[in-house]
Length: 55
Image 1 (cartoon, rainbow, N blue to C red):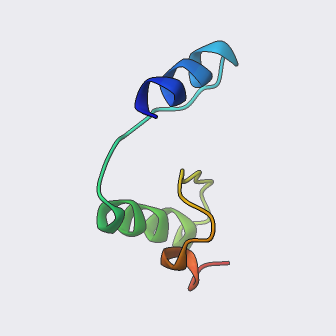
Image 2: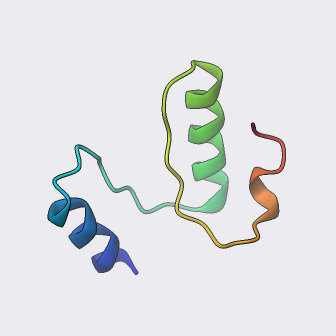
Image 3: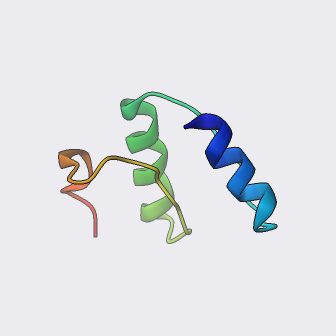
């Protein structure tokens, strides 16, 4: 999964940084970015209960 994600970012020429981390770290960073009205993309399973408290 990690290589595929990195390859997709490169193939589509996206200005993104791929960071592998734990669910807790992902939620902390996503919450911080959401609160500051900054864009965030999270790669997760569907359905995932970890993002229920975000809009």
